Length: 160
Image 1 (cartoon, rainbow, N blue to C red):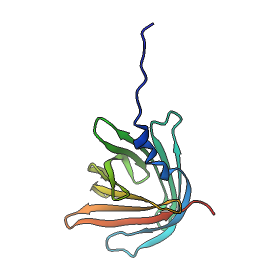
Image 2: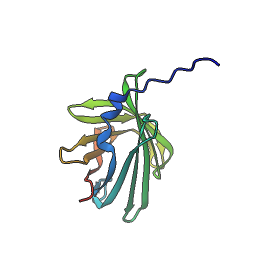
Image 3: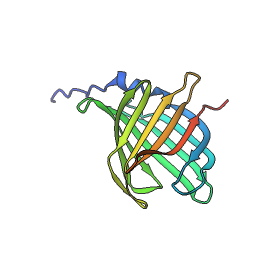
C-alpha cells in the first residue's frame, strides 16, 4: 500500500482564531440607509472542527420587523494564499459571502468578493477584535460609492 502523507495544517495561524470559540451574546446595532438604527439581541457559538482544519461560527438573531437572521461562517487559513478565508452562509442571501483577510493591529479584517443579495450586488468588510476580558467586538461594513459604511456592530461576550 502506498505511503499517504497527511496534510500539514497551519496550526499556529488557526490558533489565532481561538477568540471566536465558545458562546456569546450581545446587543446588535444595525444601520440601514434611510432608516432608524435597530437594536436587538444576537447570539454566537464558535467551535473548532474535529480535525482542526477550520473554525465554525454560528450566529442567530430575531430581528424586529425583519424576522430570523442566521449565519454560519467557516474560517480557515490558506498557506497557499497566505491569508485567512471565510465562507459565510446566511438567510440574507442565496449565495455565500466569500471573504479573505489578515490580522491588522490585533483585529481580523476580512473583505468579501462581490456577491448577489436581494438588495443587489454587495461587498462587505468585517472586523473581529478580540477583547482581553473574553469575547470580541464585531463590525460589518458595506461598500458604496462613498466608501465603507457601517452596517452593524456588536460586542459578543461570554455568558456570565
